[in-house]
Image (cartoon, rainbow, N blue to C red):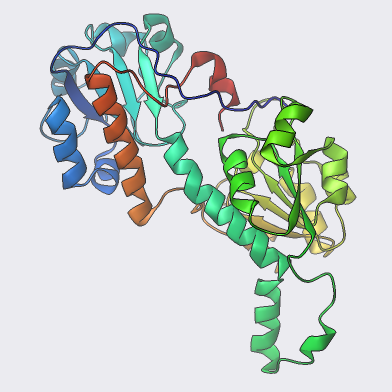
Length: 352
């Protein structure tokens, strides 16, 4: 299971940027309007010469070529086209990319690394709402909130609450974390105040580091067998596609809950649907494969699955956190201090 802990923030940089760097926005216009409000645009304009007008979402236009020819920094976002060798040839001064979202895989190409372009992203800012969502679902799952609310609505009676099964509750329950990714580590951090035992499977985390994180390292099969709630934070790689298969799902405890906020394809969705239809486990799925299952997909009919539309990541006012981190990173870079959240090529494969 190839994943690895995030490296410490780096301030490394090659040479000082221009005294007043020229910057442009490269993303879909609606992404710009969602993430970068007037205050963020003004703050960016305080530290660099920001190209006015719409964001670039097509590098083949005459306007885009004119902008690229004179730009030192690209501030990218959702919908930014790939920065391939042809685009970089049209941008001889380009030295850095600051991404206003999480993953840079969609637009930062090998040509960028070969050119030595510095890259940062707002992945650290985006990790927090995903971790918050996960912790909320862990606690809701422990109390069986969703199904008990449905029963209450149907029966219109509390019943005898003193006969609540001891399988309900969040006292001394076991939570499993699959991968100590950036988000996985944030979840571990947010779970510390609770009376929970936290298990971790990540082959790149040593026993010593696991102890520092406050978790118990276990094997993959043991993680699934022992967890009351298991949360998936594994990046999607060729080696992790379908990692959570029928065998691991069958090892889960009766009525355990599987949470996935990572990538839908990490789980064998057909096998998961079978387990759900047999009422062996529960699931909270913020991601699926495909991202929008067809209306006929039997997964929709599983009442023991909560399916949300990929909303765990930054949305609404949480976009402000992405903007704040981006402004901070651009300010540092423009001052010659380098990026605090630099993305490294050698670690790109391990980022979700």
